Amino acid sequence: MALVVTGSIGFDTIETPRDRAEKILGGSCTYFAAAASFSGPVRIVGAVGGDFNDEHRRVLSSFKSICTEGLELRPKSQTFAWGGRYHENLNMRDTIFTHLGVLEEAPPPVPLAYKTSDFVFLANTHPKVQLGFMEQFPERKLTVADTMNLWINIAKDELTEVIKRVDGLVINSEEAELFTRIAHPVTSARKILELGPRFVVIKRGEFGAILVHQDGIALLPAYPTEKLVDPTGCGDSFAGGLMAVLAQNYARNSLHSPSSFENVRAALAHATVIASFTIEGMGLGGLETLTSGALETRLEDYRGMVNVRALPAGFSSTKSTLNQIEISV
Ligand code: AMP
Image (cartoon, rainbow, N blue to C red; front, side, top):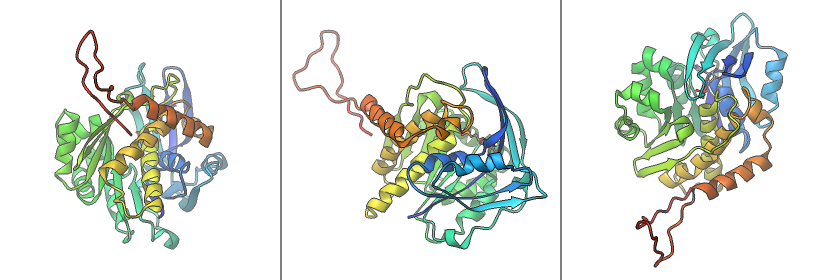
């Protein structure tokens, strides 16, 4: 079992109502890999320009299980750069600029040693690159993609081709609506399922996530952290947590389909919790300071929070009849 990801590796300039950071390491591939590295090794494929400096490299290598053999340095090119400004409640943000830089050039080659990777994640990048990338892994057992408004707006046909070929799609609710023109997240996800994937995860920020799978629907609330610093990368780290746990579960028991409803639902608990650490720091800061002990503890807390058990038979409430509910993740 080996997990590989491609996407953007770049510089983020982030403005929140209380903080500002300039040109810090970010990118969809970076956040994904940082989060996934808590559960096992992850291979990255991406290019950076001559402006990628030692500090950016240091941050990347501080995550021990990230294999950077597929990181290509192009001295004459510019690294991808993105700027975002958050609104007062941090739920909404405006993109201030996107400088594609190396993302407009030919994608970097996949190292020979990566070719046997079987868990493939297509983080946010041009759908054309996502298409070409996935085809380089003939042994892939699970392929999942993410996307965002820019690609829906400028490359919808290619993106549709990506979606037709993947097992799963992770997308936020506004982007699902932009893609399908359907506002209701479940109806919108069902429309995407018609294209071919087995599951769609609709990310809804502080409202958690909805898994719409060919075999059922599951709701996962967000972990209610009160330390809201910077949401950048939450979606990517959520995906990193999801894929890493799916890969890990498959390594333990290859008889289970990695994309079964129960497998995906269980992995989404981990995805939710790791994303909650991302929001607690500026940029990658929340993940840089995270320990596996703190991650495990919060995961246990989260499982306890969402586990609503049925009341014992005969229990009666004076106010109303309570429905029997059981949610388990
Ligand atoms: P998220 O907050 O999970 O949506 O991810 C934010 C990250 O995505 C930032 O680190 C950006 O560098 C990166 N990003 C923003 N726009 C794009 C884009 N069009 N393609 C690829 N990555 C992007």
